Image 1: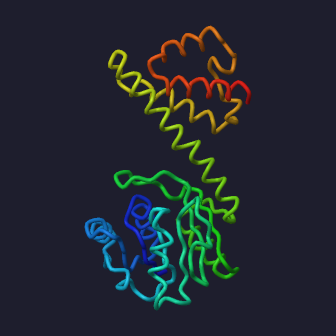
Image 2: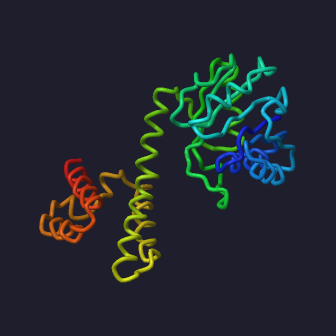
Image 3: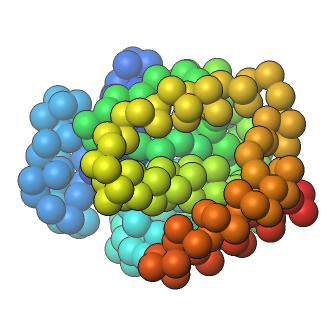
Length: 253
């Protein structure tokens, strides 16, 4: 299949590699910055442009992988001369109808991406939506060439999927950052000492639910330990509030 990538960030980079690995042809990359467009085009051995008007007029699918804030304006700028083409975006929290095209859809791979770390796309769950049945069948087929787990999911329910992902990924990673900061401030302990604990915490979720895997003073409501921890955070009021709210939430759940 011939594919145009609109965007050259973390997701577009990983997706482009996965599509190419599945023997699809990325014919062009567009990005607002020449450096990022050229870097990804060099990897995929295709052409690139920073001019929306110079984006090719036809392809099997145009995949828009840009920040949510600019998605509507970028999509709107692509309309002229590309009527009848299939456009999809990759945003978990944006509705399909943000795209001003008759043929439109969503291809949302639920994963955290970084340019420097290549991921195995086959294990990434992908969620697709389309404006008609034929394009849905096309997107399901395309998705299955790079992922073993593909779901059809509408815009309303995808919002909650994305919300859950923020809790499970972004918020969890922020907790790692707060823990790393505490270790650094108090004894200069390297964060690497936490990795076996983090690995075991995550690995348990393959055999039990998050509630079943939960341990710690909040589950037992060990007020002696909880109060001591809150005292240790007396000079970190934000962390103190987070600790207290999280402890209550864990205990109530």
